[in-house]
Image (tube, rainbow, N blue to C red; front, side, top):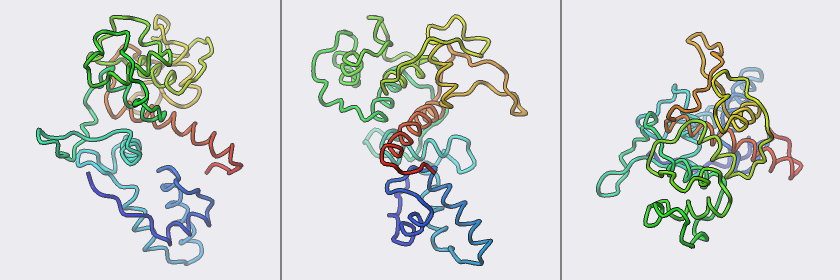
Length: 258
């Protein structure tokens, strides 16, 4: 994984000029870059050095995540915030790869959601009810999940190592963030039999998830709730949920969101 440069005083100053806040999210840096480019063009100003550094800040951090990939902003941001990490070799050294197309297990989805929601798993030291979790690398996350009442653990036979479905990941993320999901029907044609239909509908309204699209970008009207979900897709779900949290925090501080 490439090392990020520290944000210089010039970038910080220009951030303040355009209303960005300290510790701003990745998308705010992207917005800032666009605003600077427009301002530079309209006022014949030179922000070359600042724009160059912003390119470094918002670029890919993994060799298999390219700047043009749709998931690049989500993967890069979550890696910067230590919510996700890349693969390591047998010696524990980073390979520099994220493998965005790899499917995600229940345990992996749970860890990502917990990290994003800033759950301190070190406080969850009790033995989990789920016997399979005892000795598992995700044991503390499971204990936390049970304590928090995550619905995925209502079944005592949930397999932590099996692939998570798209619907399950949505429910895990919403539960971990403590969202109260209202009973509602989904607009997708294939979610009526899913136990997480309300979660999917709610997440869709909030902009956390979207359905399948045709090659021309128009909606298919389907969600595929029982299909496996890959690492790139999970980063988008987590990122979009984090944006909502960030807006809440900004609003509580009386700071307008960018």
